[in-house]
Image (cartoon, rainbow, N blue to C red; front, side, top):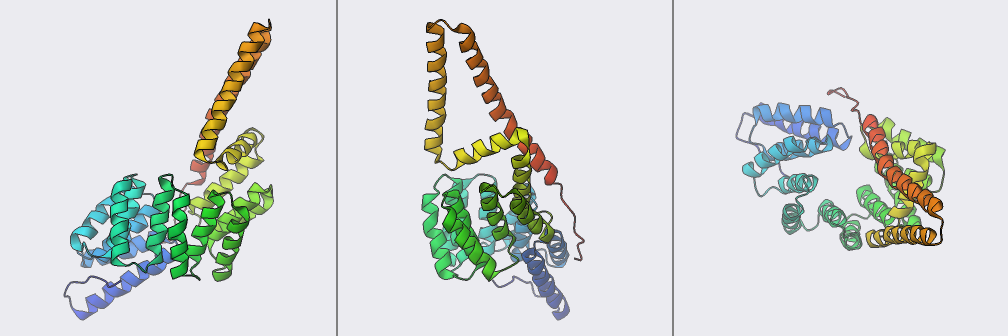
Length: 320
């Protein structure tokens, strides 16, 4: 994408180009702090660069600073409403704010602007998945793979899709292909870690999480995997983790039906025991159901706290 530059002396233009390329390099290496520093230097001399504002928004999104990213998106669109990167950043911000209709507008515009860019098809697939249309997300992911068959990002996206679809062999296959294309691809390592954890290989899953975190200590997906490993190893959380994973392998409709059936069976058992003259046993069943409900409510909160502890940002040198 062409950078947007004002008419400035040659030396300043060269410095602007250098800072923009430096920001891209640091972003590619997941060094968001360094990329943000380069972009702020650039914007100090060229405050109207739409590309710099859009790229800064993406960096801020990676740091989970959504409202700051929203401001940068507004500046990027104001500077150049025809720059695809501006709409890509705007779509990411809209998704984070759960403004899915607005996100779809930006994605549709992106696909009209650059119909051969695989990243925009992955963005469309992400939007489908977040709005409960997992099966529908397959088509744009396959289109992205068609446009970039050797792009690790496309292979990882399909691995994640198949994992979410409980198609374990295909998930493993695409994750391995992504690592063959890019042996340092942390996203593929994390997918493999989750697959190993599902198979009960706790040590293998932990090794994959640690490897990804050594590459980038702020990798949220890797931190989530590491927290899942800790939960799986914990006596209290382990049972919930297995139950939750088992439920997640079913569709939302099937999971709801299953929970309703469990509740109906519980009520039938209580009523039957009471009618048969076993009120004490019925009371015990009531307490067991209450304990189950409390457990399934408390366990996710504890898991979230564990994850929040892991999400303490590890700051890298801006010159890294």
